[in-house]
Each structure stands twice: as structure tokens, then as C-alpha cells.
Amino acid sequence: MDEFAHAALLLLLLLLLLLLLLLLLLLLTRASKSLGSALRSVRSVRPGAC
Image (cartoon, rainbow, N blue to C red; front, side, top):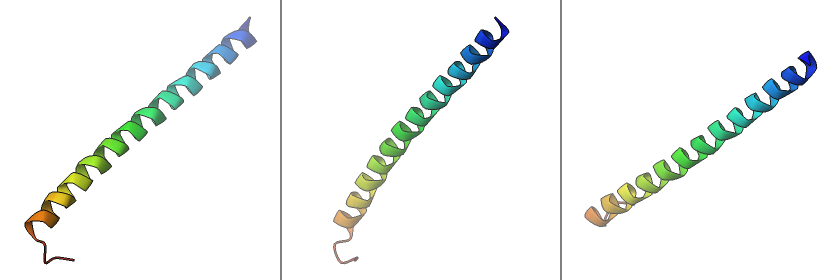
């Protein structure tokens, strides 16, 4: 029974890790999107800038 509990705990930890990774990916994609839009707006304001 103790081994089963240990395995369950490990599984739970793995699931939590996966969830955190997914959240991080979502945040990164959202941040990159907002960053890209901001860069685009800056470029439209200053067309002379490279």
C-alpha cells in the first residue's frame, strides 16, 4: 500500500509539472504575441527605423 501511495504521489507531481509547463507555454506565447504587436505598432510609428 505504501508503494502504491508513493507511485500515486509521483504521478500527481508529474501531472502538476506538466500543468505548470503548459501554463508557462501559454504565457510565453501570449507575451510574444503582445510583444510582436507592440513592435509592429512601433514600426508603423517609425517607418524609417530598421
